Length: 121
Length: 113
Image 1 (cartoon, rainbow over the protein chains, first blue to last red):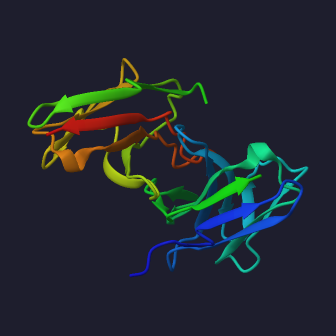
Image 2 (cartoon, helix red, strand yellow; image 1 turned 60 degrees about the horizontal axis):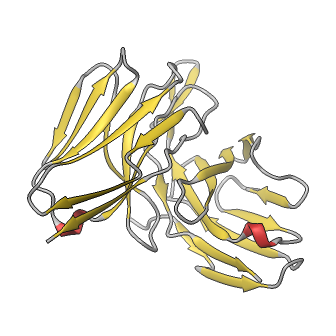
């Protein structure tokens, strides 16, 4: 079974330029997450999707960051324009949420891709 | 992300020794307590996890100890090996809530041969 696939693995851009990252989650996983990981730190959640709906984007800097998951499968994270402080690893993860009666509960196990390392010069 | 406090920040252990990493949390709604392992250039991967209905879970050389009243859980690595050298994150989770995983800041573990 293929894991979470991210591209590109590495990206170097000048500040003020746009950049986009792509993620294809594990087949059948309805929950998708984008995290940002700064050097020496833990991942920080940017946005979480349940199918195609963004259910938690409170940490996404909406002035320059945008994300979409149009068909509830793969997702794109965009930064425009990039700033020096955006240099980080952008991680995509997916997980499976299961319905238990009227509730939908996530399993809690996230599967991460290898990340996209962004360097802004 | 003050909800999760992980310690120590770094740890050096001799091969064959016991590595212990601790995680304290605040949110009593958390109901899933995993530890993730991350190697350089890779994404985190689930190592071991525990639900709050048990106080300990062991998988091979890895053990989670959970103290609900103290709101703490820890990772014990027995007979630590150089291949265990990695960064470890606790990431307690509320499956029914609005939270994604809340990661600790990580513990950089080095196992000296």
